[in-house]
Length: 121
Image (tube, rainbow, N blue to C red; front, side):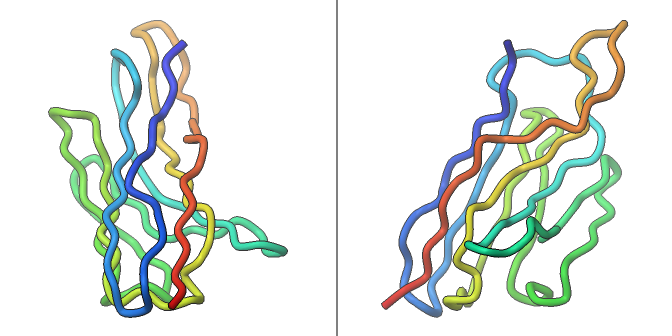
């Protein structure tokens, strides 16, 4: 079964940077929009950034100017470059990708397993 695999989380000091990546673990037929969400303890999951297949992006107001989402369509990979991190960015970050697993299948909004980002001194 193909799963979304995330990497790049960890512990970083305030003001630091991290880069997250996410890609399917195997071959899929097609990918459309890709995005990142996050969930802090006691809070609802929220959109961080999303990128369309043509490269169009949208960001949460709280991360504009600090985070950059990008994608490599040849590698079916989405990235999230996070700069100027603050403790308020501490959360589990999840990728979400619209995937057509086979030519005959429907589109699925698939989730990664999540990667912890902790911003602390």
